[in-house]
Amino acid sequence: MSGQSGKIGRRTALGLPLFGAAMAGSLPRPAIGQGAARTLRFVPHANLTSIDPLWSNTLIALMHAYMTCDQLYGLDDTLTPRPQMVQGHELSDDRLTWRFTLREGLVFHDGEPVLARDAVASIRRWSQRDTFGKRMASQLVEMKALDDRRFEIRLSKPFAHLLYGLGGTFCFIYPERIAKTDAFTQITDATGSGPYRFLRDEWVAGASAGYARWDKYVPRQEAPAFWSGGKVAHFDKVDWRILPDAATAAAALQKGEIDWVERPLLDLLPMLRRAAGVTVEPIDPLGFYGMVYFNQAVPPFNNPKLRAALIPAITQTDFMQAIVGDAEGLSRTGVGMFTPGSPYASATGMEVITGKRDLDLARRLIKESGYAGEKIVQVVPAELPAPNAMAEVARALFKDLGLNIDYQSMDWGTMIGRIQSKDPNVVKGWNVYCIAWAGLWPSNPGSHIPLYGSTPNPKMDALREAWFDALDLAAQQQVTGQMQMLGFTEPPYIPIGQYFIPHAYRTGLSGFVRAANTVLWGVRKG
Image 1: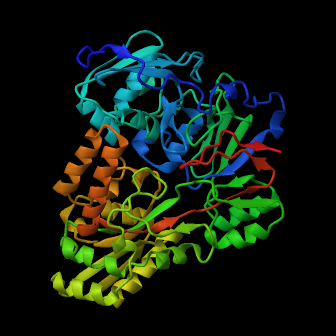
Image 2 (image 1 turned 120 degrees about the vertical axis):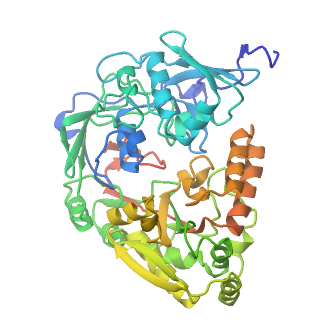
Image 3 (image 1 turned 90 degrees about the vertical axis):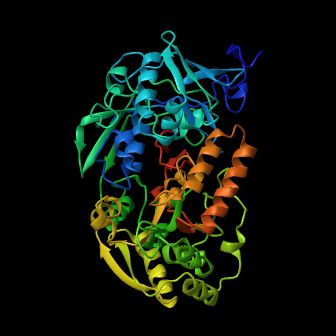
């Protein structure tokens, strides 16, 4: 077919089962009528304060969305987008026109069918805030519903990352009446079409949230993988119990009062491993990506030579041991500018991270950078154990290198307010901090916000544009190798390792789906 014709061809996925036709019909169906005993009591890592993941942009809101909503595509365990709400798609030979067909039988929690116009409205709202969505919007010629089950997106130039954007970000499908909410106004109606429906009357911020199995949800007849495949709800009810005190949560788990603690305090893991009836294991395959992040807007870290001078002194093992101790399998070093285990993790230039550490070289480079003893304010969130542990290692190292450190510990809310402020006087009030991002987001240039620094770097921004424009994985990986090299010479941050926080649960639970953000489909008792 001519690349100019725009004629639809069967170039891409048509929604076949991930592991072939033999999987069809093999998934276990949720049992019905087992009463109140079929309740999962779950302790999430944080308090649910918003039910709008696009507005909130937090992991806990994302977890809520995966309970109650669905996406057009879902990432599998290779981070490849697979059809989810769609039966499949067709792509024109010129790669400009995408035509999508929804699966049959999709029903919202209010009983209304999921229609193409719901998808169009939801995509439009998402495209105003998400990085992938904004990129799509900048190339959008037209997006419209063709009928109840089909919709079309026409672009001005090819966009190879469209499916990833629809399945690997915050693009959830809501009824059109909800999706028409302004993108910068919080959604307050939790109606979705996911495997569980939200019980709003049971939501008490800071205490609890409740979800009931949606009996009209039709799972894909495929094995679940990451955020894709068959999302089978095996519980009639899921109760979220908000227990901020880690010891209280651990005690309740040991007594059998709750079934699952998402992120127990690492210091409590030895005790939980010894507890009868409790299993401890990592579930998130991408973990957390740690970094020392700089304020490039003010001296002295507005000088890229000073930032780069610290790299020869950074020993990732020291930072990871401070978090997980000597526990095997809970950390990884030799980490570059992208998350290990992702398609864009690169070996390019990694000798600056993996080579021999040299404090004398770092001291010499610091002197050559022109640093003259200016005060460096290191901010630390007092109540977060992992950032605290990383911060202590960084403080000791900085002092050993001769940096004039002003170590300021504060609550997380105060710290976030300071580092996100645009007030010039507040911006001057911090220079560096240690933090970790959930591993999926630093896995690619589209969602890797820290890669672009606290002030724009035109060279890095240009590489991001080149990555978005690249049409195949090899070309994209070539660009990310260049981004990594630039990140080592003009670092917006320094990577300090990857770590994993195990989950703790009652031994009778099984069927956990290993994904970057906790999902509760697939899990069963007994």
